[in-house]
Amino acid sequence: MTATRRPHALAATVALVAAPLLAAPADAAVAPDISLTEVQGHVSALQQIADANGGNRAVGTPGYQRSLDYVKGRLEAAGLSTTVQQVPTSRGTTYNLVAEVPGSDPNGVVMLGSHLDGATAGPGINDNASGTAGVLETALTYAASGEKPRNTLRFAFWGAEEIGLVGSSYYVQSLTSTERSRIKAYVNADMIGSVNPGYFVYDDNPAGTFVRDDLTSLMSAEGVPAEYVDVQGRSDHAAFLRYGIPTGGLYSGGSEPKSAAQANSWGGTAGASFDPCYHRSCDDSSNIDPTALDRHSDVLGGILWKYAGQAFTTSAQRPAA
Picture 1 (cartoon, rainbow, N blue to C red):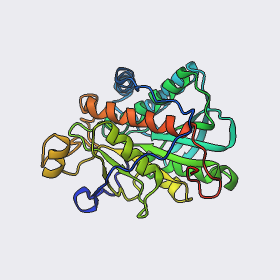
Picture 2: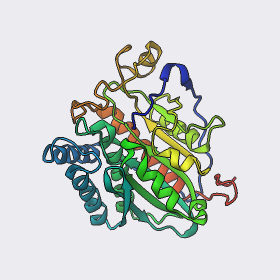
Picture 3: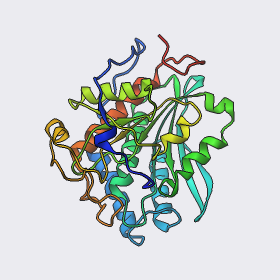
Picture 4: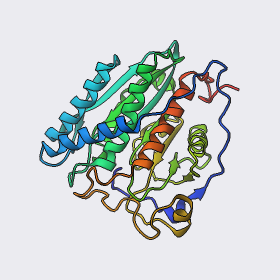
């Protein structure tokens, strides 16, 4: 997550009552478990890439390029088509990686995304190999399922998030208005394995969105009460929100301290940071809570399977009644 500003979790967070999921089509498939073992395998691979490339995976470094090669290779081996988009930045050209599972409805696209780059201070494992691994394994699990989605499923791995959300902003701006209108929902995964975890959902929209509500309900189904936090546009959902595309995201907390009430609700240590290694060299594979990583990955799977077969109205971009 970009360090421009920190969300004030205690002041800006309100508890959400889990809303029921909107009715799915009668033939909707139930999401399988997203394998924690496989998600952890991706995290380990990205750690190894950082170790072999100067200790980080930041934009403009060999570690970033090797990270992109790893994710691209895994997606293509599973049969997904991929596109690499060049993105100009203040540090030279970087790249977004986008993969798709085509749907039967040409006017419906559902996106899951995470930023692939890390901060320069370390290997960037919770921020954001965790989100990358969750989105990647969700894509691979869907590809292996043999399901045929109604909506095109698009998986994005953004470059240059850490230097100002550059990759996602460039991508959305490069779309035509018609292409943007086809995107019915965007779900963001940024820091989903914090070692003293919280369970936050966000959309930075005072009115809320159905995406945020569905993420909250899916988290409740995992046995965890979620809280809403305004992350103040500090991750890649902001580019989509700017164009009125419904968004939602998952976040397990950064350098801000966990309150006593949150520790009572979620466990962990009150008064300690959710992620004490945020943007530090110690953000390595030891800086991950496997339970948080597992729960968040399962929520990503749940939202993808739900929206894969969901009919959306074309005008309001909301699930059809």
